[in-house]
Length: 113
Image (cartoon, rainbow, N blue to C red; front, side, top):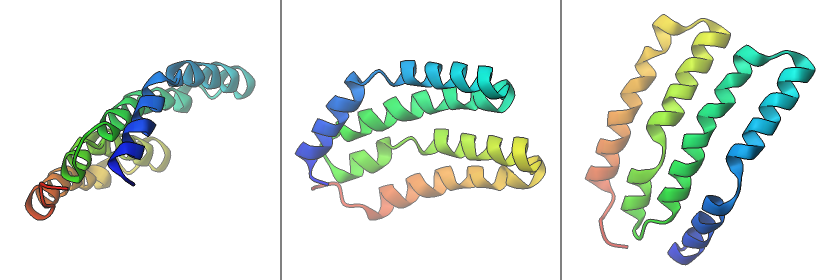
């Protein structure tokens, strides 16, 4: 994806009322199916959404990769593994992906675009 199209996407995402959609989905599904407990995790997608929108506004590929919401995604994966599959003690290793990802991007992606 080119920088200009990424910037346009980022601008659109920043203007889109994503939090209102999340609240509407939460209330609708919560009242319909009474899934309040696992459904609260949908609110964790709001910082991911805006973090990604901000990443789209970066000027270089390296800056884009460094600005992606990797830590937030890892936390959601950990919570899903814990709440739904009861893998709290085993799933902690996925947090090691965060420093490995950032080291790999810093070491192997060239700064200029």
